Length: 115
Length: 111
Image (cartoon, rainbow over all chains, first blue to last red; front, top):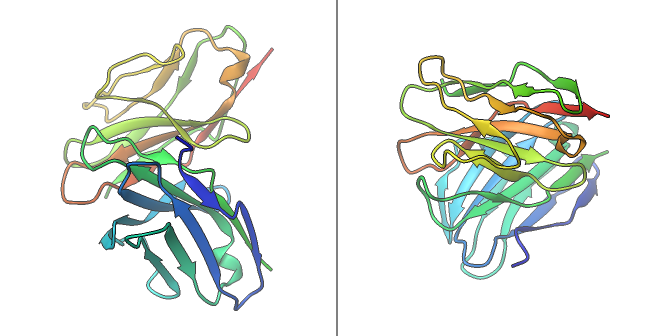
């Protein structure tokens, strides 16, 4: 089991460009979570998805950010018209289900740098 | 408000010394508490959680509901314990599974 795979590991974008971050969950996992870590801060929850559904997007900025987890393929976190403040590490996690017995396993993260 | 507080950004100890990484939380229900660890150049991984009541790599953590704390302890630190440690909380209500993290404590074990 390869674990949670995120790519790219590093992404550099200029202000105004789009950033697409991909996350493939662990085999057998149908729940995906995205977290953002700004410099000197802890991980902050952004969005929780199951296949084709957004369950909780309470941590997503209202504009420019979107996430999807299609029936086939990886989950995508999309940031439109990036600004310098979007520079951060973005972590994806996956779990088999929800509730007390379900552990979230994390990917290695994507480090986004906005020039 | 749901919040996890780790008051120490850095904790430096000598090898063989006891370690206590502090974690306090704010939550009105019955949360699940976790400790995650990130070793240098590795991904975040679960160290332990309160419902398992187990000891991993010599570390233990007891949930104290009266003090709303979940401090991580180890009686004798090893150099390989040097890492970033994050305390996290998961709520007990609703459909969300989200984790709320503290800001982390960097543990540096000196030889």
